[in-house]
Image 1 (cartoon, rainbow, N blue to C red):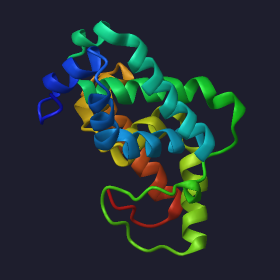
Image 2 (image 1 turned 90 degrees about the vertical axis):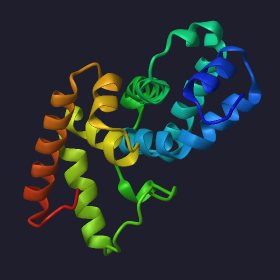
Image 3 (image 1 turned 45 degrees about the vertical axis):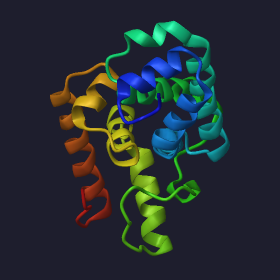
Length: 176
């Protein structure tokens, strides 16, 4: 059931199969957490947002059978869960991330890390969200667009503008 196919995984989730939920968490849990933490700036709130999503998935049951893109669906769900929690948290802090990134990051000093955290926090919400989904979540621009209910081109533009703002704020190249 929880083999490689998203359809098999969706069928298992819709049927309430615990191994399907475990497989989904194994595939996406860390990236969901990183995306939520980037939006929220709080480990505890990010943990709660991801938990909210998995509880909602359990409750959704058969309604999950209509999902076309499971990965975009769960990232959209974590985005909504994070946004519901947003008023209760402070600014984004990249130093709060305790989950390894999908690619090995370059070593940066504490000053650069703090400058990057401030620059990310200063981005408009729409740009911060697409950067979180693309960089922290590993979503394609098509998946980002689906998760944010915008076109893939809009998602890519928001990403590009956000990266340009980060470059300007840091006064150096920010690797994509």
